[in-house]
Image (cartoon, rainbow, N blue to C red; front, side, top):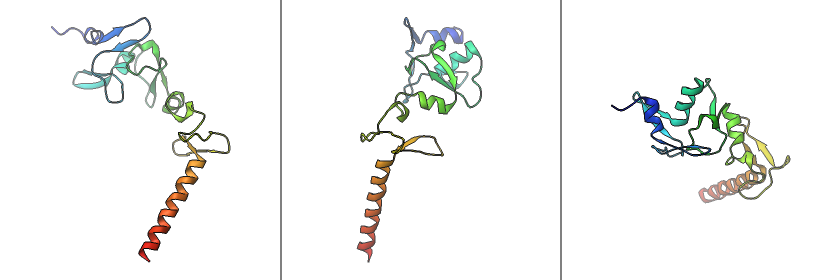
Length: 143
């Protein structure tokens, strides 16, 4: 006998003092993967729904502990995708400068209307100037 789904799930968890670390299959994005009833789930979502009920449509589960392989339902909070993105320590919202070191100041930051993500204006101008120079050179080569 294979056991109940909860028993099978628990067998793949390392219960530490804080996080419940998934020891089963991990997806390329670092999150747990769990198969049940011929369906693949994120382990954290499956256990959250077993304990707290379904996650509302359009909501994401934010790992408050910032550990992607954690499946502790007490470390999860349903939030909008935008809020989840803003909270992430690896997105631009957690940084005060772009990857090239330019500050994300009021004057140097462009907010993309479609995604709400930030873009460095200095880098954007440099990219546009370089692209225009390439176009001019290509036009000269043709003429």
